[in-house]
Length: 371
Image (tube, rainbow, N blue to C red; front, top):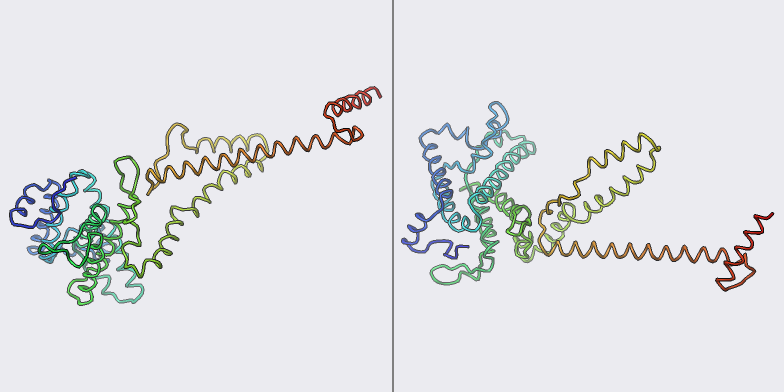
């Protein structure tokens, strides 16, 4: 990874950062500035490229604006800020991620933010029956900026924030997403820039991609580091409450709730097969199950959020379950043998020797046959 400072401190460093930025960063920065210039020259583009619910799905069906809205800015400050973010963060991330992963991350975050904004406009209208929520154009790249800021929390969580050569109030890089959300809330309350929703969505979907979806070098998906836990985005006082909420949601999606239902499928399938009459129906069932089963020699893809430690824990848990089942089978077999011996003892008139027991049983069998 490039260990140069993320944010250039001097004019020479700024100039060097602009020249050394990857081509993909320059493309996104140029696209952002070009769309701003076009917005000033052709104001009607806002109804086409910005999110407006009545245009996204309605008379015009400009469905592409859920994606283009993130790059379309009518505010010069946001346009320049987004362009600089592309250049700076691209220069820092592309050497370790690669251009394809950088583009994928931006596209995923931007599209999810656009869809969330579109859905929120409809929800606001349904809750208030105020038609202005459907006609309000929303655009700007604050969602992309928030998503890129989350990568700083992931890679440099304990890096102190330096202002004018001094640490700033013990703030670290892991605190930047929370500070950005608070700043966007203030701007929205003061009606200077209604960007709070986009900022929250950008932060969340950026975290979601890094936490569960991004493929790492070892082939696994996600980042299970403690500093990337969902509760770490909240103040210390709120973390216990958010721990309960996030743990319940995680168990519903990736934990025991879904896993228990999946584990129950083979048993239910076996019971259903036994209920079918032998012959054509049972043969058809076996054929359908065999056709729908995954290939034996093809490994299943890793679960979202899994890593080496999780794989080792699952392997140890599977081995323990297998050992418990083998032990249970052995105990059942021993119990069956003891039960068979106890049945043959009364036939021999109470003899306890095993050889006498087998001999008596043989004689009795011979007597029955002679009769």
